[in-house]
Length: 270
Image (cartoon, rainbow, N blue to C red; front, side):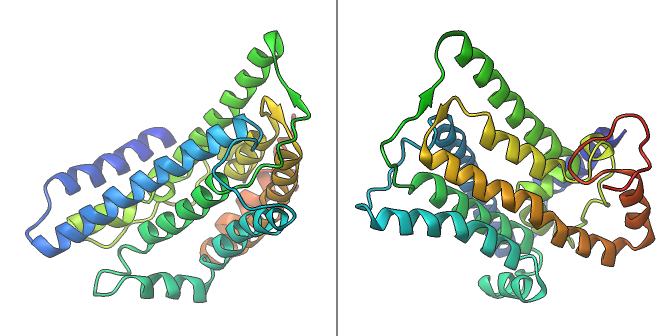
């Protein structure tokens, strides 16, 4: 049922974008942001998949050591810090100021996705590898680990769909502008993987960090840092949800665990 609702919501957005009301400048701005966000988003995802598959041992970064340690640490930290800040009140106001003109508010979700995608692209494309490889899966082990890695990405895609693909991909803002309508956000997600745990996106992303076929010091450092982020950052998200949805979220929180599924009873707190 949730998937049908998500599909219908996305279908409405697409239909509206394909038949927009008049307004050349508005349409041109929307299309520019649409092309930009999806190209950058796709590049960031490809960079993530490829870089982690090789344990961060292949990238375009070339900072000499020991300065590369500082550069890599900056690349790791910039994503969670900026990503979290932009979800605060001051951060959201900054997003609006990044786009001049009357449509900045409508485009804010798309702008957020552009910034986040650029951050991820920088992290995975500009990393300077140590050149040390501890272990690389071969033979049957490669098939098993690569299968787990693929499954983790599949869970991440499913969780993103359950949360609202138009928001996660940045499509909501520019497609709403095409329709000349205020963005309509999906309701608090409770279906799909959100029936099992409250934070499936963060958990699935953490799984992609630990199911890679190549292990290096680079991958371990990245996995430790971003897993910590995946465990702690949703606490801030849940504060926003509690403020926005009140008793509805508190009831959901009592029934569904935070990050680790429970077997049997589903009315326990995490």
